[in-house]
Length: 79
Image 1 (tube, one colour):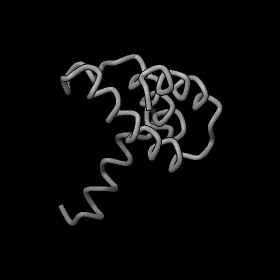
Image 2 (cartoon, helix red, strand yellow; image 1 turned 60 degrees about the vertical axis):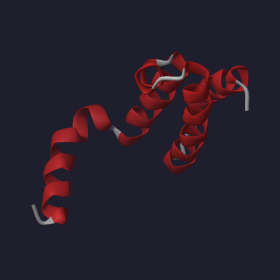
Image 3 (cartoon, helix red, strand yellow; image 1 turned 90 degrees about the horizontal axis):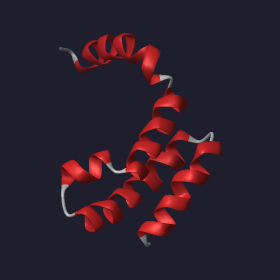
Image 4 (cartoon, helix red, strand yellow; image 1 turned 180 degrees about the vertical axis):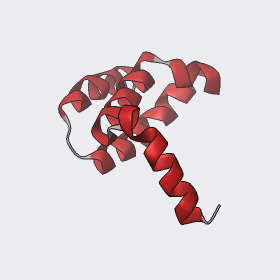
């Protein structure tokens, strides 16, 4: 996959509704971005990564559900 293809996927994924599919594609795209940037810090802030992360956040309602989810994960983990 090229960085151009990764950028097109970032645009296409904005209409997605399957969190699992988005996450799996994101993992593959991140490999391309990391190869392109040569740096984890740069890869994390790359526009393609931001687009995918935003979609994952949107699909999981992460912005408003984080605190509740954190507490529930602590409970599940036995912390």
